[in-house]
Image 1 (cartoon, rainbow, N blue to C red):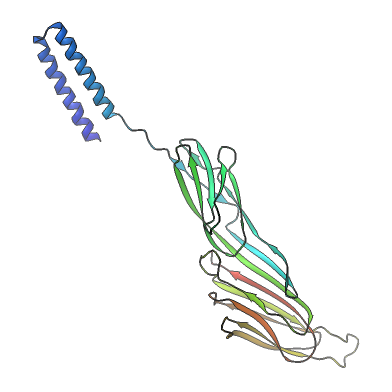
Image 2: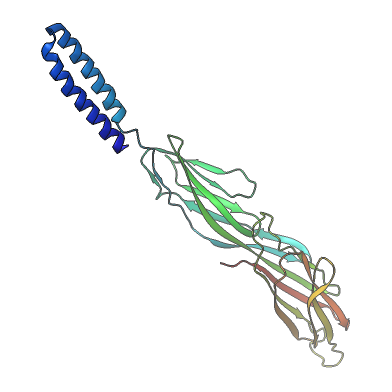
Amino acid sequence: MKIIRFINEQLLLLFSRDFISNTRSLTVEQSKYALVVLLLLGSCLSGCLSESPSKASISLNVSADSYNGTLFESYADGEKISSTNLTVEFDFSLTSSSSQLVTFGLDTMDGREPVTINAMNDSLIQVEFFNHGIYDVTAFAIDEQNVQKNQTISIHVELSIDWVESNTYEPKALAFDPIPLNGGPNPSMIEVNSVVENPSLLEEFETGAQSVQITWNIVDEQNDVCQKKTTQIQDGDSGDWYTIHFNTYQAHQLTISYDDGQDSINVHHSLTLLYED
């Protein structure tokens, strides 16, 4: 652009010098006419040399009030009794532009429609997450010239399951699926912490107390046992199992089987699907 401008300026200068030398032999009317031509030529060249309007610039700066969160599910005797989703708030207030901003938006990239707000009235967007997974959401801003700027933000959503059964002779299977529904990366691991209690039926008598022998199992889709632990629990006592499972590419079940004894038991499972930071 600078080279073309220099060449045009030199051509205009040479033409002007030539014009001045030639006008000495022209009549007054011819000189006026030639001067008009020179002015028009200079106007055209100056128009060609002028800078084109610069495109609007957006400085997109979006932050989240949380980049890691957990969904909670609670079960009693095999029935879901409550669940808590994760809500994340995204702040666009530090975003600026050389022209008027008209829209702020956020796309969760999981099949849902993007959430948008009027940038002239608001700068906060709240998004609710219902399923575990890593979400690479896209925040964006659009100005009055329809210029759009995007920013990717990673949100890690884990899942914690609390499972309780009381006075049961047939513990139910806790089914869990580590495969994320948004198509993102699988969890890094599954953390299992289980406590089984053999409550005392005869608190005032030492005779008649019975122990139970149980086995915890983590079973995959092919009904293969991935991990297990067997323990003997005395009357009035409890046993526990803590383990980490790394097969996060199949649905599983956490089960408890009776090996010996007839006493009822209380079961408390805590299971968490964990994602790497």
